[in-house]
Length: 204
Image 1 (tube, rainbow, N blue to C red):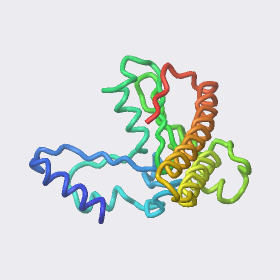
Image 2: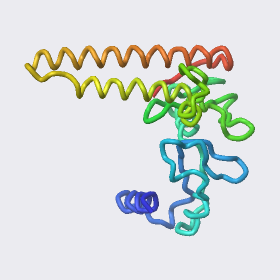
Image 3: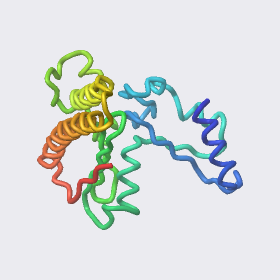
C-alpha cells in the first residue's frame, strides 16, 4: 500500500497524464527471481520476501510492470547516462542500509543464473561467516552494520562536558568508523577485480 500510494503521488506531482505512461519499473533491494519475479534475500525489507509484487501492482495499475534489483538499475543508469558510458564492463556498488552491486557486461545487466549476481553482502568477509546472523544478512553486510552500530553507540556514550570535547570525540569515532568501513569495502572491491576485472568501479 505504501508503494502504491507513492506511485500515485509521483504521478500527481509530475502532472503526467496516466494515458502517457508506457510502463513502470520497480527497483527492489534483494534478489529478484528471473522466473517467478518474487523477491528473496531482502533482510532489510522483509515485507518483500516472496511477495508476488508484480501481481499486486498489476491489480492496481494498467501498465506493464518490470521488476529488477535496485543496484542493477543503478548500474544500468550509470552505463546509459553516468560515469560508465562507453565502457564494455562496469560495476556499481551501493552503500546504504546494506551493500550490493550491479554489474554491466557488454552493454547488458548481468544478473546471473538465478538473479543473485552482485549480492556482495554475502562475501565471506566477516569474523564468523557461518554465524546464523551473518548467514542471514551476509558476512560483509553484517560486518558493515556492526561497524555502524558501534559508531552510533560510541556517539551516544560521549560525555557532553564541553562542546569542543564532544566534537573531537565524535570526529574521532567517525574517523575510525569510516576507516574500518573503507577497509572492508576496499577488500570487497579487490575481490571483485579478481573475478570480473571491470573497466570502472563506481561507489554510491
